[in-house]
Length: 160
Figure (cartoon, rainbow, N blue to C red):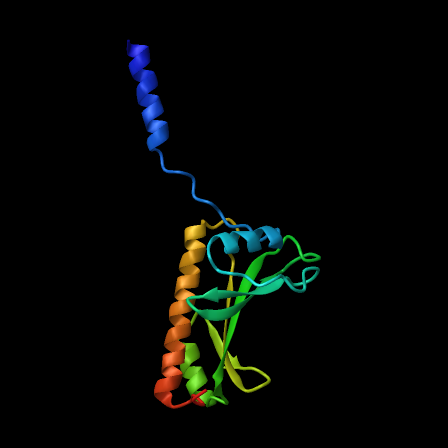
């Protein structure tokens, strides 16, 4: 009877244990792409697959370019970067961009060759649980919205 109770208790504890969190890997860009698709981020097809794999994803309705960096021949990547630009914010004043860089210290804000405001972030994510990757994307979405609102409030949008 004790053996039965012990076996039943062990079975209960195993079934009650939380499932192991799915971890993220960017060593294989195609597998990472599939993970993002399963998480609902709607990635576009991978480009530059043999060098610096990149694709766009949707984060809270905002298109963001995700690049896998530090790769060897497009594999075994070390970190990711996120880049987004605002087509309706042109030639923002340098003093305002510096203020945004000071306030959003984990991001870099600047202008691209077309004069559009952009934001950039780099993240080491290998081995993180998917929930942490989602949290990074949630912060990215929040910062994207906040910087956009700052641009609107400052009168730096073109009205597009």
